Image (cartoon, rainbow, N blue to C red; front, side, top):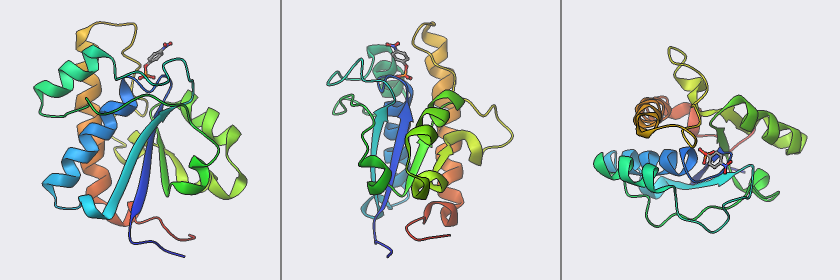
Length: 164
Ligand code: 4NP
């Protein structure tokens, strides 16, 4: 059965750097396109080390400089119900993807993708900026902006509420 709202979950490891940034960029793009009422977005981590924490302050600062507000987000771990509640689950790197696919019920696997898969001209993994410098956060945002636009440009790809 199709729903009028498309639910998209962004997933990284800690849910404090890449996936909250992806959510913030995607939310901003939805607002710019007047599409926010058609989507529900969230983010989560394959690890739960930072449960309840706000995004990394470097991610928050880099995002704010580009006009993205991450301040309301709090980290959480992926939960089993995510695999039935979300229409599209977008992993930031191959390790996140492998982890999700190993956990997901078979019926959910086709709804789990690499976030960068829609931008085949770019590297397919969003690099983890956590242990690096500020520049890593800029590179991450550059990639996320390109992929967020690409997902929304190919809107047929994201209208994913029904069986293939
Ligand atoms: P994220 O980055 O997966 O983009 O949120 C990380 C944040 C924290 C850790 C690893 C990656 N950590 O090991 O705590």
